[in-house]
Length: 136
Image (cartoon, rainbow, N blue to C red; front, side, top):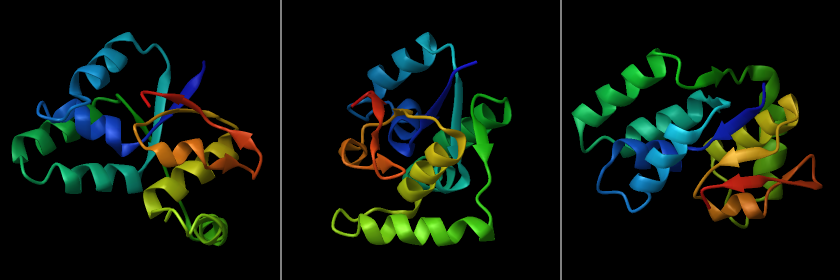
């Protein structure tokens, strides 16, 4: 089955009705038939940015708990590559959550990502392959 990476932007928009991308995120989730993958860094970023609304945080946690998205681990052995990516894109700058998603794309050979972050138009998988962006 095809897998799609999901960034924190669509996750935040999904649980924040005031977000300008809310309707688009809801429509994407309703229509999506593929497995969604992310990392704990994106989950943390989502929860931090939903901090204004405890109800939204709880709804998000329940949604993840029900298996709506697969969380992939980043281990100590992965930090060398994360550092390389962060250094390469330091002029953007690349944040930790983004570096984890680019790394996961490399590790799992996935190039499709649900994001509203324009930086993913610049990031390259293994330095050469472009992301196919959904929700840009």
